[in-house]
Amino acid sequence: MTSHDDTTLTYLDSADVARLCDGLPVADLAHDTLLAYRRKEAGLTPEAALRWTTPSGASARSLILPGWADGAYGCKIINASLGNRLLGRPRAAGLVVLDDPETARPVCIMEGGRISALRTAGVSIAALRAVRDLAAVRRVAFLGCGRQAEVHRELLASACPGVEELFVHDQDADRAEELAARWRAADPAVAVTVTADARAAVERAQVTVAVTTTTQPYVELDWVPTGGTFVNVSLDDAAESLLLGCDHLFVDDWELVVDDDHRLLGRLARAGRVAGPGTDAPAGGRSVDASLPELFAGDYARTVAEDDRVVINPFGMGVQDIALAAAVYARAVEQGVGLSLAH
Picture (spheres, helix red, strand yellow):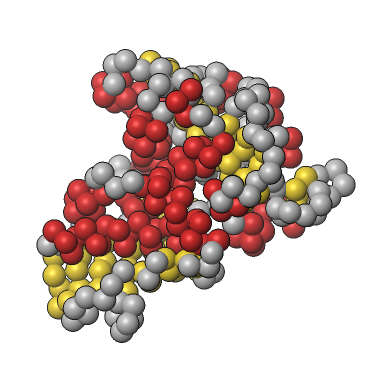
């Protein structure tokens, strides 16, 4: 990101961000950012987390994720409350702040919900492309029917043009039916089935994308069919049997996983049950097979066979948000989009 007039602060609202994101090669950007991270041409610092219980009793949190990529510096602030759905609001919302690389003054503030959702889905698609022939994917399942499901489906529609069946499950059956109705209307050629339980969705799909809010692992190894790929986007859908028993296990950054005390994989690592990439498996446990940067760089020696079970377990890295936000801001500058605010 090149330096611009840092006496002006540009604000991009959700409509601006949506328009500027349209047509961006999000999966390619996610792929390239992780390779830059491996080369130490992009990076991040530890996130800060504020957690509380709302007056209505819901769990809430605010995360601040600083990062830098290709000369762009800034942070994502992403907040969420599990009670928002009952208020008719999205679970998560936030902002991305970009800084001038020379003066460090903020130069852009943009709505962060779309950025966060797109970069998450972009990482998923980039990882799937690295392990599977997406042209052969016909059946996809979604566990959870919120914004992340919508955005993943949006990117999968172009990445997997041969998809014929979608299976969706949510603990809120009405929410699942509403999502299914929208997807049927958007593409009548694709069959959309709401399943009564999560297992029925996973067992019928070649690719499953878990985008729930659960903190209780529940997807067992024998749910995932031979040759299936499980993308564990949310906290804790994959159970211990799946994490330990799958044929290939990939993470985006092992240190982030180990340091986190909210996810099962991190707890297994600290308990000595799972070791990092390139290390010997502990007795009765396993090693992570590779990080996504290693996989993308072609440094993963093992072949992913057609009948192997694969788990992709990305932690989520703020550097991805900064890279995508910088691309959006560059478009905004080029097109003269946004509200200018004087410092």
